[in-house]
Image 1 (cartoon, rainbow, N blue to C red):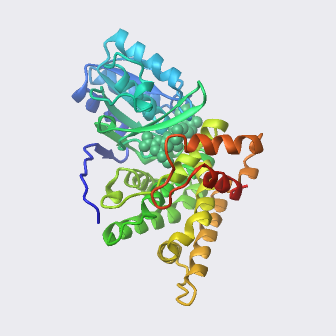
Image 2 (cartoon, rainbow, N blue to C red):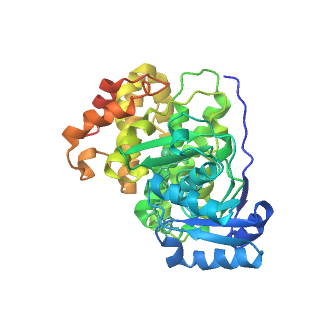
Image 3 (cartoon, rainbow, N blue to C red):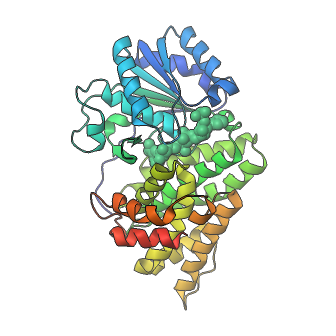
Length: 389
Ligand code: NZQ
Ligand code: ZN
């Protein structure tokens, strides 16, 4: 096991009706809040009105900025930075999913910074100060509600870049599974895919003697695989929604990755897809992850066979563990198909793939080779995109 330092101070407030306390928790951290949200789902569901009422009841002044798109854009975050400065905002309440939360995090480091906030994402500056961020989560997926990351797309050149900093860890996150009843089945599926990917990125490691975190990862993956299809058939089953919501947070609050070195190549390969085609991150991962597995499994057949056996219950073939490993990848693809997410680039209706694949491979590796489990150069990434065709 590797040395590690674990920090996750986000207060998780979980359960029915908890969103009505958004104002009370916001009042603990700020006097004037920026209420930040997405494209309108919270207005349609009535959540917006309830949050506004809760802020008023708690005596919190606020201004608002909606319109965050999936794959959140730098330009809106910059607008948020200007608004927050002009209005003297000292706290940001993000109501929505990973995109809204990531946009809020971007605003939080931009407000106290004199330069262009994009410099942080390009590693030209390190965030030292940030406004606090609180969350009312409406889609379990990205894990941003307690992660140390923010992923932003710069429309100028279509660069989608993730930045990690302790400054990003939200102060609190309100998780009411009832708020996820209105999710379209496709968004539920993309969310489940993303959280499963967050566990798999950490599971495929070269670090030995990580038995406890292996078992935590395996339990999480089994819980996601069991519950995600149930949510599709019964979207208002509270207990199923609750299991998925808690899985999404635990998959990405860093606990299960401690002492290990995660891979993360699939995420970076996917980010080029969602930057270029503006597709849902989870859908891109369902396409990329199995292809990555097929490309790298020979690096450690035993680990892939363990994944197949412990997560999907594939019988272990001691004479030929490669059979077990390959069956695990097949079962993963079947699981994604059952959820209704595409598992091939050609199923996703993407234009100009032939021209874009080499470009995306170059962009994915422009700073360094990708992946810790297996190092991948641009030529490897290109082969992975082609395996995913
Ligand atoms: O914008 P609205 O109208 O709210 O609609 C959203 C959006 O269209 C809708 N939605 C959310 N909650 C809903 C709902 N519709 C009905 N009922 C509800 N309760 O769902 C759509 C997707 O929302 P989004 O916030 O984009 O989803 P997600 O949470 O999957 O976030 C994806 C973003 O997070 C990034 C991804 O790259 C992507 O940009 N990630 C962030 C990470 C982090 N910060 O730690 C890690 C991840 O690996 C990921 O990269
Ligand atoms: Zn992800």
